[in-house]
View 1: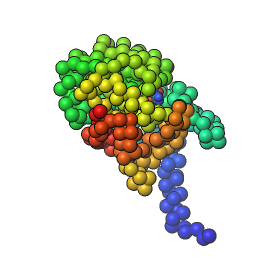
View 2: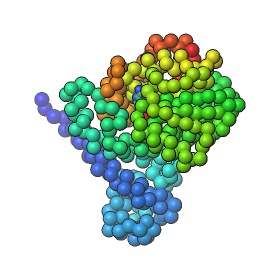
View 3: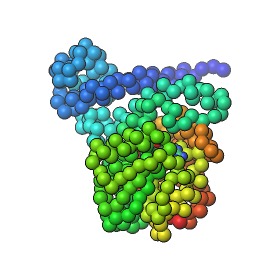
View 4: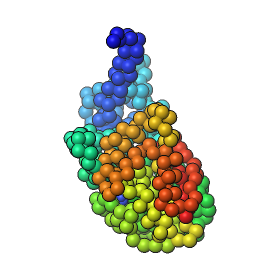
Length: 351
Ligand SMILES: C[S@@+](CC[C@H](N)C(=O)[O-])C[C@H]1O[C@@H](n2cnc3c(N)ncnc32)[C@H](O)[C@@H]1O
């Protein structure tokens, strides 16, 4: 078959852009760890000597790093003054850890994927899973760093108010369980915002629960506790509100998990399920967000589910229709989309 030169050049152009992005990934992490982005955002315009002095780093490395970031469009170069700066948008994405669109965490998680290629490659051959805890440790802090800016920006102000009467109850004081809580970014945000309520975070990964306890101590929140437990066997009953943040699709038996949740909810209690944004069919998810989630799903979420009992392997792009089937087949009578962001579906289920 003859190659269409125009199409070939377009594809090569795309691949060169993405090769640059992949090669620049480590530089994003180095920039984050050494405070290069943060310092440039706060003090720019600066030249490479000024940024190196400010961050106690070597000028030659910083000059090369700045050139790579300018070519990436992540910092701005002014040729006249030979100086670099960050626009408010560039600073929001790379220079400010408290911004709701701070994206650096994703690159920590991507590092874990590269480190875990042998395990994933082997799983492709055997069809077996890879447990969450068997990944390289960057995955756990990467997930926390990637998700928490969005939770900080949305959870208290947009997501909880979109649920039916939950905000009011949380303010008064209720009993809450956060399932698959990881490092507890979501649990701590809620515990701080609603001091009259009590929160228990559960996760089947013991190292994540250790970190969650440390994070709660650092944050000085007292209305919070943690236990190592799976979503199907966590202790307690009479929970008024139960949450799943970006984890239901990672579970081997999400139907069993939802059935257990239904059992331990108090009368009038409800459940919030936060899942990656997705449409219901593959053709509608062939876009940049779907692409990132399908990639993470292949290397992290699907292997995590396949490693557990049932191994339903919903994948990170399950979509509302498939999630509705899971939740209603577990016995929930009511299920609706409460709200959404470009990255998340916020779903509400009631018995
Ligand atoms: C993508 S992480 C999300 C962590 C956290 N909810 C957050 O938003 O930062 C998925 C979490 O689900 C947990 N997990 C997976 N399967 C589980 C199960 N069957 N029971 C409890 N936790 C589970 C993993 O250990 C991991 O912490």
